[in-house]
Length: 75
Length: 444
Image (cartoon, rainbow over all chains, first blue to last red; front, side, top):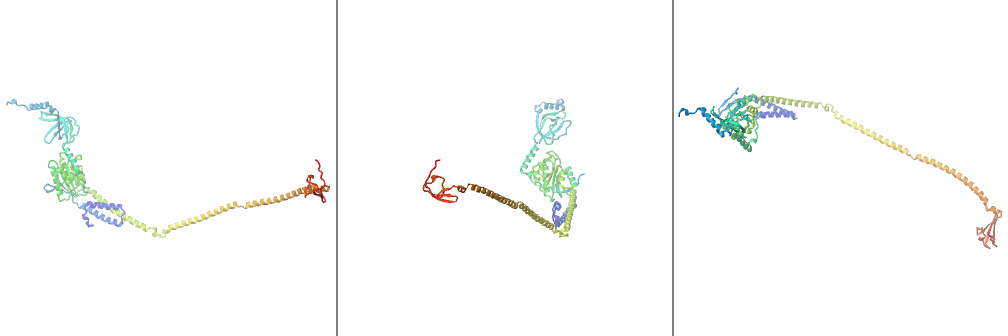
């Protein structure tokens, strides 16, 4: 389960959605359901962490000479 | 030359003005050109310029125009050219105006559009815009409202994405090159961009023209990243829009397409986790309930009840069978009884008795009749005997009569006899044999 790090956010989200809908809909065996539940919780945690750890938006100007400068939003 | 030889400005202007007025060609000229610099109408008077690649002429119309003038529109005008003596300029006065089908730029636009369409460039599969981008590249002018709109929209919705702005010339001759260069820089960049936004504010078809350049269109097609385009106003369409993976009506809309709403995702995530827990809890509960249900089943509590239904059924069948048996026997008995009665009713003994009575009756009758008959016969016989006795020849013979017989046959005529015949004479007290001696026949 530690290999989840390679997942993209989208993949993690859609996997989580799949697990939830599957659990809600299908009559899957209890053991499997519990396994899915554990996996779902891990995915959910992963997504939450990804969002929380994401850096705040920075707008960068990439000039033609490839120098960069930060650009603050106009107000 | 003496000073008097010099013309006043107004005199020259008047002269020129006259020249214009009398010129037969200038009274009715046919001019075609592209509209530019449309000014707002002032009290029903419309001012604008008509131009081509190299020249420009002011136009004035006092009439109400049959359509709304737009920048870049190709028109055909019939009118007169007049010189204003006051300002020393000339103007085209509109008599009639009509659209020249499609302007030159529109024509080029359509030709290129047809060409690229035939090539299938517009039918290429569209790339999906990533739902959760980390890096977005933006091709737009460094100044202006466009970048501001995109920035604020992204900050409002998804403030955890990196925006890289590639300042680009979006109008004029250098525009096409600038766009292509920046697209290449984006592709060559180390940053793995999720989405590219190409944006520009509104303008005339001329202003937007670089986005209709074939080289730009091909550069967009060649870009491996999904591209959202927002070029001009919603009503403007450029060929770049056709080949983009998504077209947005405004820069704000482009930013909305490019980013999700972080709050929504977080809410969704919380919801998902909640649903995950709820559904699992429900599943566990259901399993528990099922287990308890099974545990409390009567099979475990009173296993003998397993047979109850069979016993009941057996009893029922047995009763049914017995009932059927009894009924069957009853039916048979009834039938036999019925037959018996019928037999008795049809018994021949009565007839035998009847016949016997008849027989007795007849027998008695027979006896009675027989005796009567005998008595009658006896009486008749006695009577006959008396009669016979009365008629008996013996009495006659006793009175002297005899019977003559010949060969034991009674003779009652002389013709039966001949002389010398032997005859017997029967008398009452015996028989005499005699011989005929003489025959005398009496005449009758």
